[in-house]
Length: 234
Image 1 (tube, helix red, strand yellow):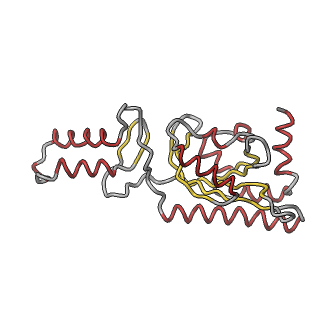
Image 2: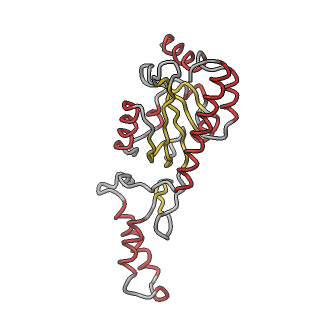
Image 3: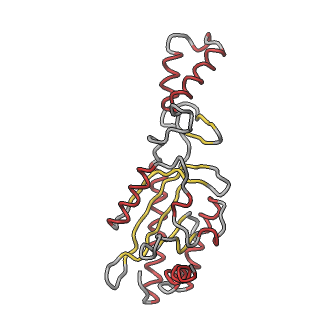
């Protein structure tokens, strides 16, 4: 265990100077840096933004795999997509349901990019940026909530249109409105009542995707700039 911790510490510190750590700490983004060459692909650097968003401390994050922040409702296909990108050493961008330290789930756009060594072109790190996805429905309508978890109510709107389609809004009774809400909830919760149907989560907006790309560019710029100054690997 001790040797693993040493590897985690050396993974980042032996490649980059104190200037890099200070520059990364100044960036206002939520991100982690991981090392695929170490068993378990652990996190070797974590930003203040990630700590604030997740509720974890630095000591609770460094050395852990990103899967530690997922949970029972995290889409396994999205996780597999990230794993495939790691194996193929390429960037990827997926929607993920993660969990804060207090157990609160939240949707985020996860943008991952490899960092290559100037010496031999091998991947030495992966940068992963996390951008919270605003819970704005793609259809005009309200956001449905249960157990504190927000999600887009496409199905709710569809069922609501069916329920209310044959009557004028001003004469629809409160009881009918409530019935429509119940039907809507039933349509988006799985058959056993076990929770949210996350097979088709809300897509990140173009603005959120641009925000993630901007963050990746800024982080890679810091790593590249300081690597050139110090002669260390990037």
